[in-house]
Structures are given as C-alpha cells and as structure tokens.
Length: 293
Image (cartoon, rainbow, N blue to C red):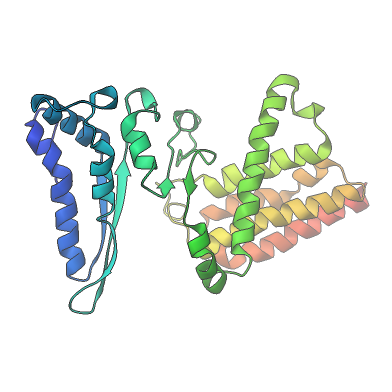
C-alpha cells in the first residue's frame, strides 16, 4: 500500500501512482498475477496540475497540463499480460478510480480515462440511496471485451452464454424506457406484456444484480451460478409469456410461490445444485395457472 495524503508534498502525490505500478511490474516479472487499485487518479491529475502550474507550463482544459491524456495513457498501458524471461506468465490488472468534482464525468480526467480504458463501472448515488449494492449503474457502465471473450464463455460456461448476457442487458434497457411512461401514467396503464417485462427486469435487479457483501453465501457468486441465475430469469419470462398467451392472469403468474423461493434461495449454501430443479418447479406452477383460469 502506497499512501500519500493531500497534505503531503505535491511531488510525493504525483509520484505515488508510478511507485505503485513499478512495484506491480516487479512482481509481474517474477511470474505473479498482480491487481493494482489506484484511488484516485483524479488526485494524481490534480498533483500534476499543481506541478505544471509551478513550472509555468501552458495550461490545457480546466488548468490541467496539455499532456494530461498522454500521461494517463502511459500509466494504463503498463498493465497487461507478459511472458517473463524465465518463461512464466505474469500479469498486471489496473483498476483506477476516478472521482471528479461533483460527479461530473465530462471533466478532462474522466474523459481522458474513458478514451483509454475498455471497461467502465459507473457508480450511481441514486442506487446507493436505494440500498442497491453494488451501486453500479448498468446503463452507463460498459465493457469492450465481450467479443474477445465470447468464445471462451462458449467453450467453458455454455454455448449460449453471450446470447443470455445480451438478452439480460436488453431487458434492462427496455425497462429504463418504460419507466418514463410508468412515472407519468402508472404501470397499470401498460399492456400486460410490458408489465411482465417490468417484473422480469425487477427480478434481474433484485435477484441477479443485487448482492450482499456481508453475507457468507451471497458475497461471492461463481460464473457458472451467474449463468444459471440468468437462465432462470429468462425461463420465468418464457413460461410466463406462454401461460399468459393461454389465458393466465399476470398476477397469478407473478405470484407463484416457487418464484419467491427461487429468489430467496441464493442465500442458501448449495444453491447452484438445486437451482435447476427450482426452475422446473416454477415452470410447472406457472403452467398450472392456465388450468386455474
């Protein structure tokens, strides 16, 4: 841990990031996989701005030095996987936190970082106020790696993993568009198929995206379990659509007991082994709502 507080000399604050990445590279050269967390690169950029000002260099946008973006790029490009001289594999993964004043990501440090990195996790104060953790906004966040990783997921998780991921993110996008209508006229004014979409999106948010970091079981989720949970949500959607097309009522479909059991089950040990049987039970109960009507 390299710590430099705001009351330390500006040169120390500017050098701390380089110290961290150099130590990370040292361990990478020994064949280790290293994770470096830089918190925050905004303070580092402010230190660069102070030094640049004292050197009377020509200022760029918002007083930052004109070479700000190239310095940020030089830092992040030092991450990556290498083959060491001894023939081992080593890697450095850099996770940089950007904390712009007022949360404005249009300022130079945020924009310079976004132009370079290929993954962005956007923390959302609104989600944090709703007690939704991790408070990562699923609409603003993105990754440019899926195409590179799709084949790995097909070979190691499931052949339809990329399609499942696309469907889940698509449902969340549709929900955000429907929420504007819901806020004006209420969800009851929507057609039943759109009301079902809202229920499925709520399952994604509360069952799939939300995690309790302090819970012994829910704090960690294996990638295989993630896939099964996503498939369970899509199975509910397919079963519900089929039942409603045969005359079932939305309330009856949504309130089947096994759906609640499925969502609560993620807090129990061994959930990965029983989730498929729980999905089968849920599908059966949803199909039974047609007979009841």
